[in-house]
Length: 486
Image (cartoon, rainbow, N blue to C red):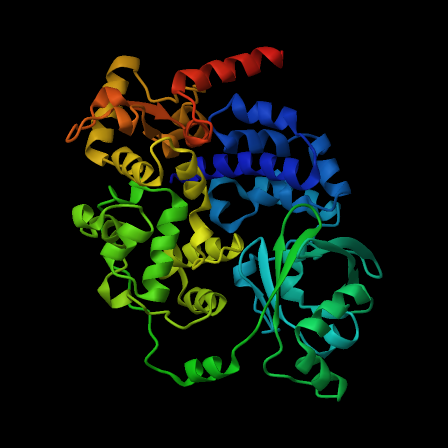
């Protein structure tokens, strides 16, 4: 993506994240962006104001200056878009309001290997003695950005919520004092008791004054809103770890990316991710992936759909089962060490981990199972229905014909045009819905272009939701809902 367009997209992300994390609707900011096709120009206008905007002040009050336009301008990747003077204005304003400008997270040297920041929303920590006995754990300097406390004043504390299996525990982030203040995550005794019940043997060892227990668990923290973290625990298999450390044969072959993206673009991200996981971790062959994950008849597809997805990402036969028997988090860390050359695969595994998906759970595709239950002709017919909606040759012709008639692609139910909303990224992005019920099709009858309707993903899901509804029925429903809200 062009750098200016990427910056423009990130400006919209600032608006969205501010609304979700802070609860502040920056309507004036959104209006400026919506009326411009260049976020860089908007950013320059904002920083040249004599006083900070209301949005900047709100973010300062909420200790979220990381969401400001000024902070975005100072990202290293956008260095070429702004003059030295403009970057100085942004830097000075942030410093005037007490914001410490740190290097990017991936450039920080982590002196505490027990902490691993996997992404902006997920981090893990190997729990130590203090976690089991003192209701707290140290936060490394490098990990403070994850908790957004790098600018926290000394001797201050910030309340947060840790939620484990639906139970909330009021906890705190604390900043110490002195030349090198220590930061801590503290929690109530009720949370420590969870650790004691889950890991009684480890708890017993720490009570006997053992300072280092090799199989102490990881706490996995996932941000789920402002100052709210979903918590889970993972047991470290030390035997597997030691074996892996000494196993010099464990390698991840270089990716061999192919330009062909037809199969890759025919499936949703969730399904593509599962294909990658099952191939890397469970050595499933292409035909099995087509059948079990993509819902196809492997006798017809012959495994070409899964193979196309994998090949587009650069995954070939020598990648099959490369992570078999390896923990997901360990695989992520292994790939992160290899850097940008395997980033596309790293991103897949991070998404799986962030969604907390048990990839081997048959309910992984619960969406499709539920839709299948409501399909009049039954699940097997629904499988056929989905297959027909993925006939990429027909879909391509249907899109071309739609453009010839209407001049552009848009959802026939809600009217959204992805190119107008997302720019070049949204060009030609739409889903095809098979409107003719399978029960009305004769044996051997093929799908025609006129049998396909253009729908966005949300509307596509709605027409499949039981009780089923036609595209026109959904359109009327949307229109009536719009009128009632006026």
